[in-house]
Amino acid sequence: MSTLTAQKRPVSRPQGRPAPELIFGDLWEYDPAPETADPKLKARYELFIGGKFVAPKSGKYFDSINPANEQKLAQIAHANAADVNAAYAAAKKAFDTTWGKMPGKERAKYLYRLARLLQDRAREFAVAETLDGGKPIKESRDFDVPMAAAHFFYHAGWADKLDYVAPGRKVAPLGVVGQVIPWNFPLLMLAWKIAPALAMGNTVVLKPAETTSITALKFAELIQDAGLPPGVVNIVTGFGDTGAAVMGHPTAAKVAFTGSTEVGKIIMRSLAGTDKKMTMELGGKAANIVFDDAPIDQAVEGIINGIFFNQGHVCCAGSRLLVHEPIAERFLAKLKTRIKTLRVGDPLDKNTDIGAINSKEQLATITRLVAAGVKEGAKMFQPACSLPAKGYYFRPTVFSGVSMSHRIAREEIFGPVLSVLTFRTLDEAVEKANNTAYGLSAGVWTDKGSRILKMSTELKAGVVWANTYNKFDPTSPFGGYKESGFGREGGRQGLLDYCKLA
Ligand code: ADP
Image 1 (cartoon, rainbow, N blue to C red):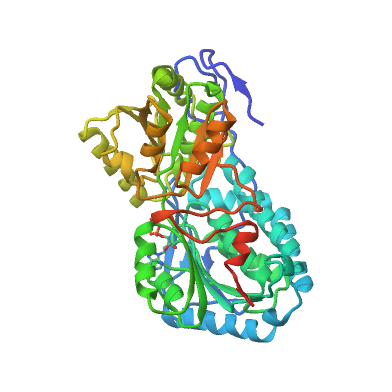
Image 2 (cartoon, rainbow, N blue to C red):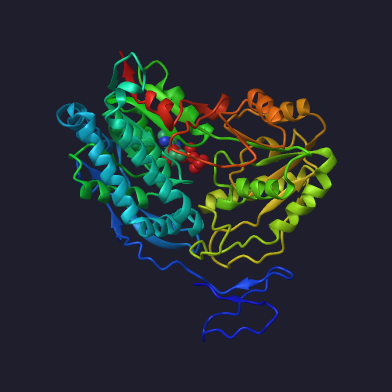
């Protein structure tokens, strides 16, 4: 429990604890409130192939670092092509001998079991996710882990009802599926990938991102505990070379990728001419559009939620704010006031809003693009908060006076950086929102239902949220337009991407 102490009063604190920084003008400051659940980490993680943890044939390991303090958390195996081969052989065997033949109602039992086991160990998984990825514990505890469990529950419910996925048609699994996921929602992206594939009767070879492999390997422990037949899920860890081997393997009947548009294009080029099914969930540059009749305070909160919580490490982050000219000045002032109250720091602290940037490389990318914004003449605002001395952190940043040609308005930054533009008419808002190579998501804030309907029809985005942002549900399909990719994850549509129709 955190105790509330007025910052202007002298605070008595246990010996040895440093004086709390008095960061925000007249704000209340909290005592540290770190989450203490034991993440039960191993010193070294092997590959998970054929139901067992096995040493990599490559003989190589790399370190997974805690981005909040730059300390090593664990050693992770670096799989080479021979390891990936072994994973595909195990997955193929499982498909041919057990999983692919099992009735849906039997597969459902395993998926329910996985969901419940994840719930049982939710705190432990949340802490592991936060340590490995840098996201605030309140995000991993309240969003990532429960939502991952929800995906397994939802797809368990489908496994014995697959005749209703495409009424009037017969569905059949594809075979072995290769999946590569990014570092922003490590466990949740795993759930988005594995749950529908398994419900449909496919088996899986999955590669997590190199900076965030730990929760995938902890999930492998759940697979053992749930008693899944060996080889149904195989987890190979490593870098881009391992990812390329997973995507390019001849045994894969389908590949599913979530990551950058740049890497997505490399994969698409390398698979051109093959008969593999493919789904891609790539980058985004979402616009959050606020009209003058919007509930202003809720909209401010929605904008903050859309880009600053989770360090902006969200492909559907609302990284562009389009605000109606009559309210622009007032809205920006309120936004800045709210930003000054965001707590940046230790991701394990339950009061932290903005945790650590996932890696040194990502921090360098954010820093470079922010410098480009300043150089191109946009006006930068950052609150005067101090950052921890060790670890990768970035202050929440707002650019006003941004024009469509600025790099910060066009390129995906994947950090807590918001670019503010204004508009006068609905048509101008649509034009500016759609003027991007991406099309993953958008937000509309207005009191008028008719405006919401018009905007959601005209915006070229896979998801349009109205008077809310970043809301997810396993029943609701998610995916992009244009360079944000193709295919859907979640809902009935997501299942259709994992089956053959007859
Ligand atoms: P980000 O820019 O968000 O880090 P990336 O697209 O670089 O995203 O990485 C997403 C995932 O793709 C990671 O698991 C990474 O290891 C993997 N990856 C990187 N390069 C390749 C590649 N050439 N082929 C397949 N996977 C790759």
